[in-house]
Amino acid sequence: MRDDDTATDGAGKTADREYIRSPPERAPTVEYDLSTRVGNALPTPARAAKYAVAIALALLWILPFIGLLMASFRPLSEILAGWWHLGEITVTLENYQKALEFQTTPMDRAMLNTFIVTLPSVLVVTLLGAMAAYPFARFDFPLKKTLFFLIIMVMAAPPELVAMGNYNTLRSTGLFDTYLGLILVHIGWGMGWVVLFLRNYLLGIPEELEEAARIDGASRYQIFRTIILPLSAPALVSVAVIQFTWVWNAFFFPLVFLRSSDLYVAPQVLPLMKGRLQIDWGLVAAGSVMTMLVPVLLFAFLQRYYKRGMVAAVAD
Image (cartoon, rainbow, N blue to C red):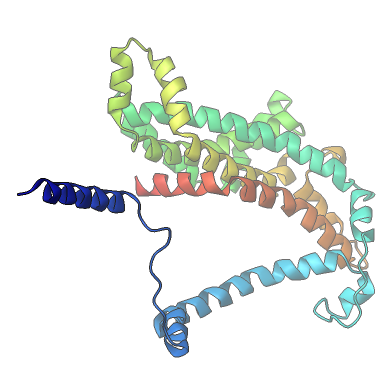
């Protein structure tokens, strides 16, 4: 073989390598006619039916909220004619102002009371639930299955049964009609499902991570604080969101354990807004929107972590 042939082959191989290393900026396009493009864009009949059912269910689910929201911004005269009538719409914030200045318990005070009860109930039950779920997921100890079964039984008990036992206890300890008494009831009521939820999630964390940390000299507390808690962040967020929603919207426990009007939480104030002779639906709608707005915003802000935690806990 001649030198120029060798040079040519070397240059050709070099050019081929350069061509392979530099991909085209975009994929080659294929031109289709209009009917083919439309056919490719349209879903199959089965998928179109699924889309139709999903959209119908979504509209059916969100329609009451739309009516509630529209009623909160309209005067009573337009609400009585039907919130769905869009001929004449008067947008006003009078209903929200009346709710915030409600005579029995202003909604701003009720919202503050709800925060005072909800935040400790969520933080304490999340931390204690994680500390209780870790031994059930990792350790073997006497009566482990029996204790876990008792926790599940407490979770399955109706709230009326829990209220009957706690009513006399709070009376005798001086915690009846106090924030602390209601907070303790919410913590005890939420511990069962939190332990069950977090235990299922912790079973999916590889034990090799903990074994490696123990070889490096880490204690159980250090393993729990530096490995288990960070890896359990999605599950903890899921627990916090669900517990926050339940405590925030709770009506039965505050109704039983709170008597002073200055301690009323938001769900307690809403029925009082109806009045005895006439129901001001705009006022009730405004109070309802203000009450449900906080859990909705919390879920919208943390939905990514919430979905990750829920999927992992159910899968495990």
